[in-house]
Length: 506
Image (cartoon, rainbow, N blue to C red):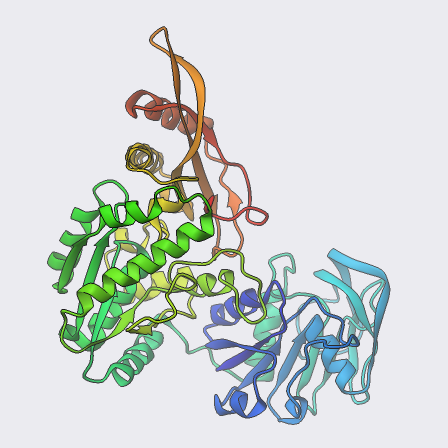
């Protein structure tokens, strides 16, 4: 168990990913978590994240009193290192030359963290302040042309700090440094695997649920499928899955979901057709956040309506993942967009929420899915948002626009699969832009909708790059959509990365 204290850094979740890639379990806690609560988790190591503040400013995030004296090995990164130095008597001040991007790093002393990594390295810096002088008892182990204390450590006190970011891919030796800390300094063994997570999650689900019943919303997507299979493995027939057809699904989604859950898993499934209700509530709504809130609220209300018929139903299971939590806004992160599983829940919900995947990234959830027996084609299905096509129809959602998008999306995905690109992408889909443009088909003027294609590559959904799909593939997709989908006369390709864009358009 490793605790990552979050000081608001943009790379905090990457720190957690790198630790888990070393097969060591970790959890992210807010910087102001009481020390007693941190130590109650029995952490074998603590990592302090970066952050945008200056340690000497009024109101700057601070570590709990006694943290640096608790005896648990601690590694600071960027702001975490500055805070360590500031609290223990070192000097932190604004740098005369700010460092952003790739920077040359020179090893100046023997170091546990930098062991066997070479003497002249390249690291990734992102800071304005710097440690001018290390606290008493610390040895400076690395420097850069503009940073006199790029790394420092006090082996006796088990305190370590680096000014650069080992968690990003731009620091080539970053993973080895993290392993040096976890395996060398902290003497951890890397025993956290999908199998161990499943065992722990099953035990926790059984303890939490007891004899109560759980209802779980399934859409056929990866997240809901994994959480349903995991909970079914834990409590069997105490689980009832409810499939809400809100009319915002992909082509032929309903039939596929019923077949998989009833025939493959033998899980009790209730089919709730609520398309008319959702479309009525969404009529005339243009604001993306309002759409998400409406879909989230209606979704849970439908759940409550059907859950009331299930005697003893107490819990609502959701496939919430960690990127959903981050983007919906945590204590140290601004709201980017509210997620159906997070920001869209009514305040007075009559069911307790059960989210066993809440701290997992998508690739970890997929590994858990394979561990509990999900078929590979389901595990590797591209992510599909809870609000469905409701946020892939830009602007007002209507039945006409949804039907157009359904057929266009099915064509795009079909061609991506045929071309062998499906598994290479994080996600690929079509979206409808509510702009009509003039075209000509069969010697006649048309005035129809535009379909956009979005395809991205990513490791964890926190960042993404637009996929360089072959022109030939894009040409086939465009030609088929324009020829086969009535109401469309133009296809465009989105070449925006995340950030500054998001995965979805809304």
